[in-house]
Image (cartoon, rainbow, N blue to C red; front, side, top):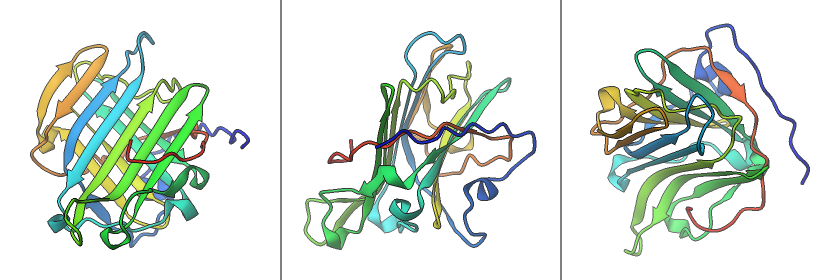
Length: 229
């Protein structure tokens, strides 16, 4: 598969995510309770760059998939903030990198996964239900994001950080918000020049404050593998 064209757009205007993602005005927003946020990367360029996010809600929370990224792609907005600086970047996840996630029983619903590998940078995104050990009972609705060593995505430790989060928007469907720190709470486990980590927020939320958002290069899809990473 050939390398996709890189898109890098600097925005001087204030834009909303609805405009950026091209989703319908009537599309909904679903908030998923965060489990862990880890951002590694220093402003001076030293050390490994890494973003890890996990979030999960029980079936009773009513979270569901609205949209099909295998048909329309998706966008992923990554945010970290401090009183003095913020990082706010949106990455296009093209439809060619998405697939229906394997191993989920049809009666449990559907999940999607995105995988890519470009110049050593590894991307993995998962959204949807998981199968439980009890037949006929769906597992939790999960979001999992792993990013390793992609220098084009300059979302770094804000040093000192106060909050962060992600907004995953499925093309033609809903957007899914996960918030850490700030009003969402959580234990800040690392907070220095190279690492910002928050675990176990106590509330769901959406880190969607209007800002000048830049679109960073799209990851190049690679053949899908099995499992939620």
